[in-house]
Amino acid sequence: MITIDPGGRLRTLVASIDPKPGLRGLAVDPHGTVYAAGTDCRCLVKVTSDGKVERILTAEPPWAPTEVALAGDDVLVLEFTHADSEKNEDWLPRVRKLAPDGKVTTLTTISKRE
Image (cartoon, rainbow, N blue to C red; front, top):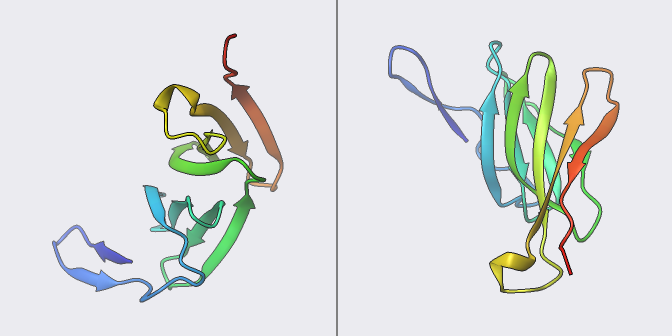
């Protein structure tokens, strides 16, 4: 994972994350901490400005995180389930909130209409 500082300089924050998480959405807080949606490993990864990597949220199957956003001190995670379907209309989303104290709340889940 490479960061770019305000002066345009590149810096390798972390060379690799194991196991390979299939990173998608990213968000960066004011302290330089990066939050990344690890779709392949079904987790939210936190990478501190000194390169420490930590899994801070795990999604149970069939859910997988795809995007991350910050709202104040809370981390919002968009997750999808697609029940092994290749059709986009079968991909169902939910949004979960991770509070600073570690509490996880599901804010919304969209279910398929029959």
